[in-house]
Length: 157
View (cartoon, rainbow, N blue to C red):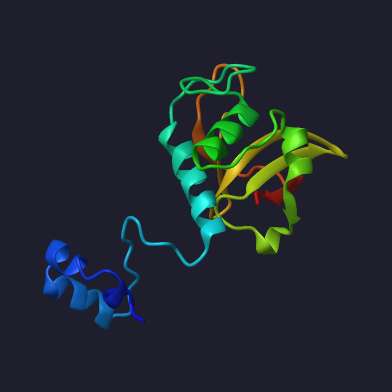
């Protein structure tokens, strides 16, 4: 069954030419209420979008939103809004995720910064070597390039 057959009401919303153009070029239709191919990816994508929506929110130690965040507070808040529960601290979040290699990382995975075996910071992987995170006192939630190789990746399931 094609995407066009699953959502006949889409014809009236987008117009025949638009739907046929999307179908002809092999595009993917994103329709509210239609289940995605990978439900886990949807949760990670939503968490990533929530984190990005908090751009500019000030850092505050111990804060978990909705207006101020520390690093693990941002990841906790973002995944909670996406429908997943995480523990409060970065180290506990690391212990709760399925660990993945850098080569298998995907947008929405958590990025854990460590010194030796101790996790000290967490952000949400945005792709292209960047994360959304709440860095430290005096700074705000922002998109930033990963600045070290001392990171581990975890997938929320």
